[in-house]
Length: 109
Length: 116
View 1 (spheres, chains in turn brown, yellow):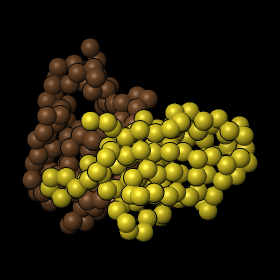
View 2 (spheres, chains in turn blue, orange):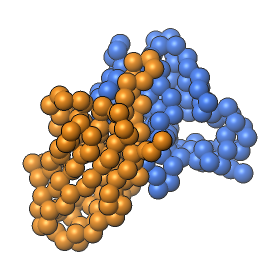
View 3 (cartoon, chains in turn brown, red):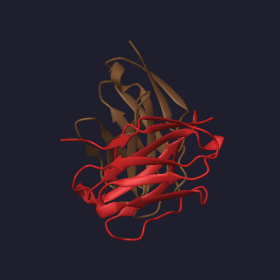
View 4 (cartoon, chains in turn green, blue):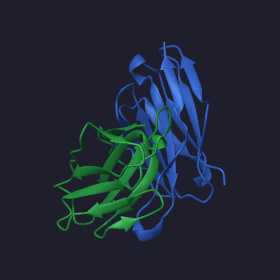
């Protein structure tokens, strides 16, 4: 599995954009880049995934570096409900996910 | 539609007893996964079922852990002779092939297991 590096924690203000970085320099050419988040006392929740191109969905955007060694999850307008631990997970399509420690996102009102 | 459900939501057991944890995946999802999360720790992959293929058991921590999936739907995770270090939240997820060739995993609420 590719090793990932994420900040332990980040803080942002409500209604401002948030950029969550992830380094995955050992990612293989066929690995997808998945992002999941875990709200307090809940199971993880899928956020977004991509392979090479940038991706947008209703929750977030994913910007993938051209060399695929890093990616950034973008929350365009953070709300208090976005406070969670965010996990960047490179991996194959259907394999079990290898969760690291993730980034604890704190949203200030 | 209905999401992934797990039962029981909480289970307290004595050291040395066997426990069974149940997972009902989303209808039609071919893949099913078990993970566990110990207090203050990250999520740890345990086992993965895909259709009728042999399961990927690479994450099971010991031979006291086993899982089965009957009829390609409901799954049971069994822990024999429980130890205190087995105390954790056990999470089940299911998925189906989604857009772009990857699988989005949908997680259940988990079973909190406490071994006393």
